[in-house]
Amino acid sequence: MTTDCLFCKIAVGEIPAEKLYEDGDMLAFRDVAPQAPVHFLVIPKKHIQDPANVTTDDETLIGKMMRVGSQVAKENGLTDFRLVYNNGAEAGQSVFHIHMHVLGGRSLSWPPG
Ligand code: AMP
Image (tube, rainbow, N blue to C red; front, side, top):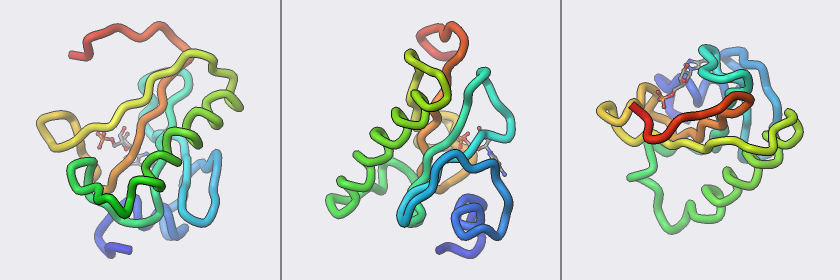
């Protein structure tokens, strides 16, 4: 845990979140500012800053994020959905604990702005 990290605090329950899934190393919770009818985040409990800081040791964990995100998407009624990782401020990252956005429930345009 990194003490000044918002998502580490959510991971240990110090800050509340609307949890959709939790196990020993992973958590999914609704985004506080949803950009689609269904919008939640999947995080590892381990602090990893961003995709660029994923190591070979993290590969299983990062793959699991996709499986869990897809499973929770289906449980929330989605068949079509988008998975997004932002890496760095210019790409839109505002919380520097790796997270995967899962968005769905409306038509999503491409490319993103
Ligand atoms: P990003 O901009 O890719 O770093 O995404 C961070 C996301 O975290 C944004 O979509 C925020 O709305 C969301 N967020 C920030 N604080 C919270 C919180 N306390 N609970 C749930 N989601 C949050």
